[in-house]
Length: 234
Image (cartoon, rainbow, N blue to C red; front, top):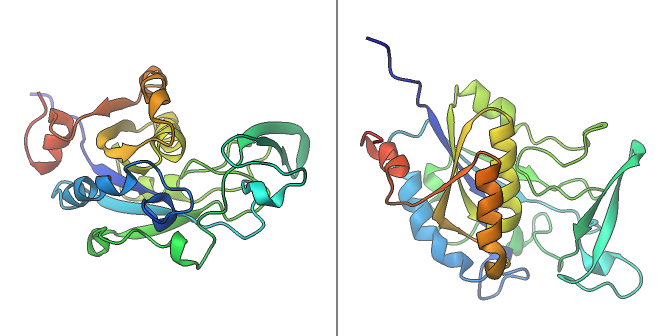
């Protein structure tokens, strides 16, 4: 009889930080704090091989902050061009945001109520002022890469096969992390109830794009998640 395919899952808790949570977060994601009970339940799942939380951990002069740009740039509305510091021919456009998650400030801390006891490791990202880094793996620049969190190596060291992604925000850092995890060869699930988008009206299109990239958006009550608690996936 053929052996069962390997199943060694990891949970990635993406940027579940005070600045992304209502009521007082500087870049509060609508209903963002409501995902904490779902995430805590997932953190307790016995099948998980590793539980990793990430933090945006920006310097004060980070390129994504609208206030760091001349010309009265507005958060949420305006964009800027990010240029690869080592290759001026490689660029991308990024949305500008309010100042958020500045390293070592209260808003950068993991959100109150998150079960920190169960988190095995915290990885910081967005630490280079020159580039935006939504993904927990690395920035979008490739020729050469500017920032790499070491997440791929951490998952491979734990022999992870499946990655479950939750946190904030669904349409930015969760999305980019899930797509990069799939590109790295993992089976990837975004748990729908464990995330919220910055732009709720666009979440349907974002879900479709995730599915097209090979990422499955699943329910906390579905078989993919129940498997974390010892129930066989149908």
